[in-house]
Image (tube, rainbow, N blue to C red; front, side, top):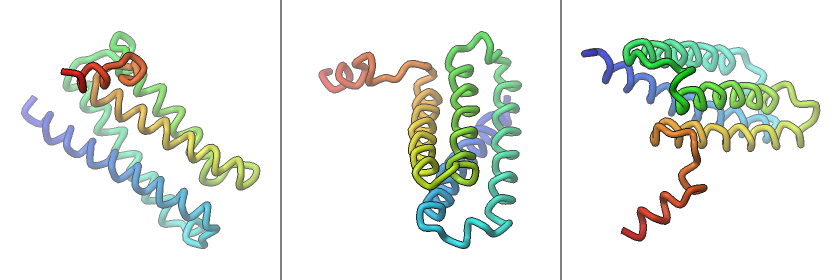
Length: 138
């Protein structure tokens, strides 16, 4: 377990980069920037996604948690598939710009959910159950 904090730090760094780089590519799509059609953004995205997946799998293996028996990990996995699917539609596969913009917004909401799940180790959205309201009243 001595490498766990290092791998976790690399995983979090990859997550932050992923969100930032997706946001940048989404902005380019909205602005019809020629930067989006260059090859390097796609390659950088795939490379970071590969690192992100490797770090995530390593963390699960090191912690000996089973995603199928851990609701918060399963929620992250389902959210990840949804984020990747909607994100792909947002950046390049949407039939028109309005669809791409909507899918991008949905992708960003999904990634906020994934981060909340990771922080709270719970698949429920804290604001739904008044956790924040209760925390503020204490």
